[in-house]
Image 1 (cartoon, helix red, strand yellow):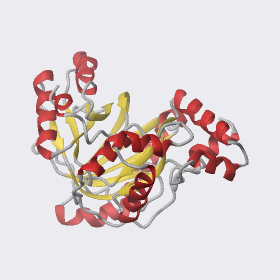
Image 2 (image 1 turned 60 degrees about the horizontal axis):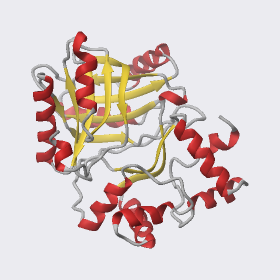
Image 3 (image 1 turned 45 degrees about the horizontal axis):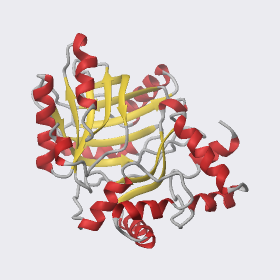
Image 4 (image 1 turned 120 degrees about the vertical axis):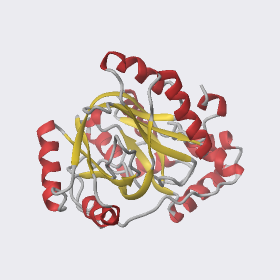
Length: 328
């Protein structure tokens, strides 16, 4: 990665310009020209380092989504993973080291549509799907600083408040799912897809950020391609009354990329506090999770560490998938 590519990925994961010609604005800030910026992002996308440029919505704010898990016989894992990944509503699909070995994130326009998606997967695979919805978030951002591990932060607990969107807003959410076009006026392209004006698109995105509906607007990277080749999901079984306090401490710790509370799925899955840790190699991640247990007073509670193995799918969420796509 050259210096320009590094800055384009690292510096604009937040506060991406909301102006008619954003790539020209970046070029002016970086001392280059618009074509060089667009070409650099195109190279990064082709190499897999850039997932998209766009909105990261507040969890639970738009449509419905959940983490889900399945216990798949090893000899059927790839076949079942292919069934799961084929659904447009599934945006992340990973093998993890556990009896529950297939983990995915699914999104849909409504709770009923999400339940229908999960039920369809269960029928096609012939395997139960555990639904593990978000209860409370402590840190969900999905930014990956390229210059070192994330620093400590001061998080707060947030619930999962749903935002009611009008028809025009939903059209814009759908248009955003693939990210900004690598073209001189990408908001004009969004506007055409959403049947809005270019300025209306920019105004909505500014308002959504101010309201917190959009957690951040900018570059979304692929961590594996950028060197974070080891990651693990650490989970703990805490008394319900203790989860928020421990979750805030966990989310405030350095090196934690995600921290949240999810519903249990008894009897097979008792855990309710989750965090993700990414690193360049397995030992680094193991050491950090062990340190988190000590730092956050979690060692006394039952826990498990699930390292990722195979990445079957990684895309942005699709909250506005058509019903026929959801039902297969």
